[in-house]
Structure formats: structure tokens, C-alpha cells
Length: 270
Ligand code: NAD
Image (cartoon, rainbow, N blue to C red; front, side, top):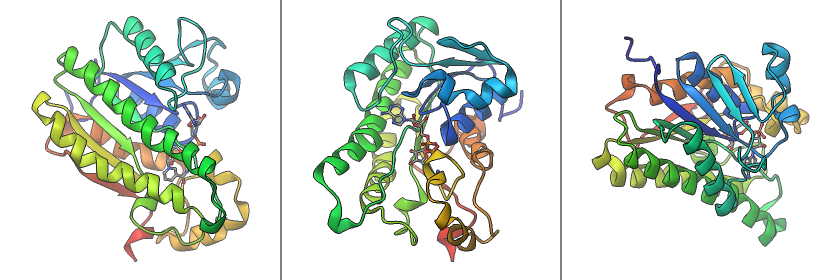
């Protein structure tokens, strides 16, 4: 079997209803994994494209090839909000029941951005960012690691979604607090990797550049600037960044842990 194959593996992606998370979920599924998704948006909103593309049923369970989309907790039909410890734990409990405790790959991807000048940023704005981008990601990774350890997976891989904003002060945006949360993700990555290495779990991060998603769509006036920052003169489609995730999830990257892969069209390199 190819070392890139994820056949027989189980994956969980947070924030996977749309954008980068959805692309990661699809990439993992295309490589053979069964994939579950946690998100806060209603199914019809988040899976709209998928429904159109693949004709899936509208329900809390959504099978698309090998992707099982779980919108929120199966048991009480509520959403999984990664910024709430209770909601996250409930989501994991439902997920464990449905997948017989299997978990090999986890991609904590749910994240938000706030574009505000540093001098106008409020405590509340910053708290929202921290609770989703940092705490939500950290505790998703922690719950995933616990499940991987309990289930003795031989292929444990956690892929934290950082950003090129953890490498540079993004030129055309006012997002100092967002940069800080993504810096936190990238620096916690090797520290977590070190602690779970003894269980055979690898932890790496991905730093995407500008990607065409809901998050970036609200800034059409910045598009030309973003394009000119990339060496290849365009911003990424979500599919452009999925390969890095599949690689990090697979045995092809078995010697990589504590690392970060930048997928940014060269923005941070010149
Ligand atoms: P997006 O807004 O298109 O998608 C984010 C998803 O996360 C949405 O489906 C949303 O409902 C979900 N989400 C938000 N808060 C949540 C919560 N509390 N609990 C569960 N789900 C929640 O954004 P995107 O561009 O796809 O971003 C995904 C990740 O990629 C983020 O972590 C973002 O910081 C990172 N990223 C994006 C870009 C980019 O240019 N788009 C660049 C670098 C990094």
C-alpha cells in the first residue's frame, strides 16, 4: 500500500464545514480515511457546496463517499463549539460512540479572524479569538491525543492549523491579535509534539497563506494586493493546501514531528 494511503484510518477535522477545513476533510477522505467534522454552522450553510456537488442527504449524518459529516453532537443534535469545553467534550463522546473509539488523525482547524487596528482592539474581541484559535485548538488536540493514547493507534497524527501570519506581520491586514493566536499555535506545536512522542503520536502544523474562503471573501478590496504578494500572482484555492495535510497525516511523513509546513505561494519568502 502507498505510504500516502490513509485507508482504514479515522480522522476528525474541526471547522470542517467549509473553507480550509472542508478541503482538509475532503483530502483525507480522498486518501481513504473515514472523516468526521465538527462545526458550528448549520448543515445547509456549511455543506451547501458538498450537497450540490455530491447530492448528499440533509441530516445530521452526512455520508459523502467515505466522509461522515457530523454537524455537532449526534446525541443531542447540537453543534460542537470548540470554544466551549463542554461542547467539545460532548462532541468527542458522540464521535467515540460512532467510531468505536478509533482516531488516528486530528486536524484542529476551526478559527476566526478580526480585522481591527491594534489601538482599537477590545478585550472582548481578543478573548473571542483566543477562545477559538488557541484554547479551542489546544483542547481539541488534547482530547484527540487522549483518545489516540487510549486506543493505542499506531498512526497518530495531529495537524494544527496555524497561518503564515505566525511567520510575518501580514502586510495588508490589521490583524495583530490574529497573528498572536497563530504564533501561539506554531510555538505550542513542537512543545506538544515532544510530550506525546512517547506514544508514537506526531504533531505538526500547517501555515497557509491567503486562501479563498469565507474568511478572506469579506475583503475584496484587498484581493489585488494579496495576489501581488504571492510569487505565483494568485491566492490559493482551498484545494491548493489540502496536500500538505494529507502528507502530514500519512506514513510518508513518519519522521516529521514538531514541524511547520508553509503553503503560501512564496509570500513569506521574498
Ligand atoms: P472559514 O471562515 O471559511 O471557515 C472556518 C470554519 O470554522 C467555519 O466553518 C466556521 O463555522 C468554523 N468555526 C468557527 N468558529 C468555530 C467554533 N467556535 N467551533 C467550531 N467551528 C467553528 O475560514 P478558513 O479560511 O477556512 O479558515 C480555517 C482555518 O485556516 C482557520 O484556523 C484560519 O485561521 C486558517 N487560515 C486561513 C487562511 C485564509 O486565508 N483563509 C490563511 C491562513 C490560515
